Image: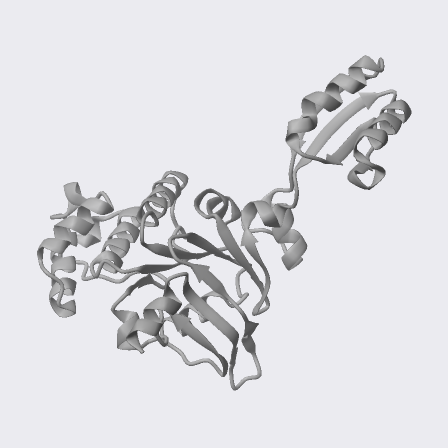
Length: 310
């Protein structure tokens, strides 16, 4: 049985099927959620505030029970000793003893968790807090407090890290530092699940994302897949001749005319030079030629029908 669990978890570190959470008040926080997180990726869990992200993470960590459906996390049941031993998490703001140093806070946690004391120095180095390790937690900036939270979550050298809105409250420099930290800790064997409503952050950290709206997963996949196929933006005059030539070259189904001689073409980017040459040779003036793609914000707006959290 143990061998089977390892086989199941080799590719999918998190998997949910029909996961649902209803509260007695009638509120449905999560509904029929089918989520799949692969080993070794930094996965972005996106959605507007109140979409059900934190509720989902609490279920995965065993903090609350689902009403219906099932979930597997690192090959075990949420909240079970087998899963908790292999998962590190920050849900909401990390809490520490303010009068103790960062080092002593982690030393206490290591003792309670049965982790060797030398691991404290290793995780402090990993989150780049070694120079301030002996300072009291109360003197730390917001970014340093968040990094100490990550260090605490790393003490067990977990296979999976779950981070809930980790850059909330940080200034732009703090957000950039934390983003780089998440990318670093997500390398190699470790998997990171990051929930956020900050699209720019997710776009720079993650390869695959899942988008949740009103408790339902409305999209999941690689960011480039969700944006759609490659697009080429061309502006050329006279527009009627340019349209005829481009339709002949790529097919009318791959050509979307716009205003002022602007065309959006669904085509392999390798054909850009060829199309430009054809237009110029036909005596058509090309004033713009560039790759174009939908932004993650565009995708988010289409999927959630709400303002993106930028």
